[in-house]
Length: 303
Image (tube, rainbow, N blue to C red; front, side, top):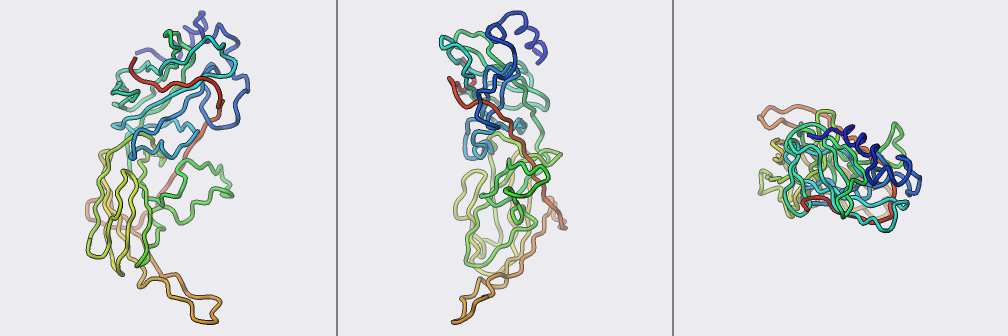
């Protein structure tokens, strides 16, 4: 296994990346969107593998934590200061025991630990590198699909209010459909990217229906007032969420009424899949790292 600092030493000795200029970011990026490589000559990003991949929600950001057992696809683009004659090639890895190539530029996370991603030029020369972390899935979080799993609040909730989005505060009303998303998290409650196969079930199915199953997202329709259990499995975890809906759907406002009562009471409880239920609280934190948004690009994987 080639260690991260081994690559830094090699580059210092005269590979393409450090021969171009000083091994620092030249500030030609457009803010905190991509992850700048350690040499500042490439900017890493994620490609959405499939509808079970939380990277589909990352946009231009580069969350650096990946779920063990998932498949993921890194890519990169060259910084503006890289000479035009250098063409972007592919992403290689320096930790083959922890991640293995699959196909079409995808990698499979085999074990926990750090993995070094190496941006290679088309001629095979090292341009830049960065390090990501692979984590075991410790739990599954249930949220409204509209919530941003990688929002950074930094202690200030303005602009990233997640109130009412986690499983313990979800409310369901008869006659309405809710779009929900499951998110794999590590032992610190941090969201993990990577494509995972999920299976959803709900009971009693006579009262609650899964109308649309799109990998890590579903549309859940409540037919009538009920207590129900929503179960999702993926990443080696099985999670059962228990809810009681409002007694009825929102009432139509009476003529002349300025403050109609449109909300019912709802409580959410969670079980660990063993049948014992109890109250619980969810957690979600994310990171995004900045960098450049211009230059040549490449999706990593097998040559």
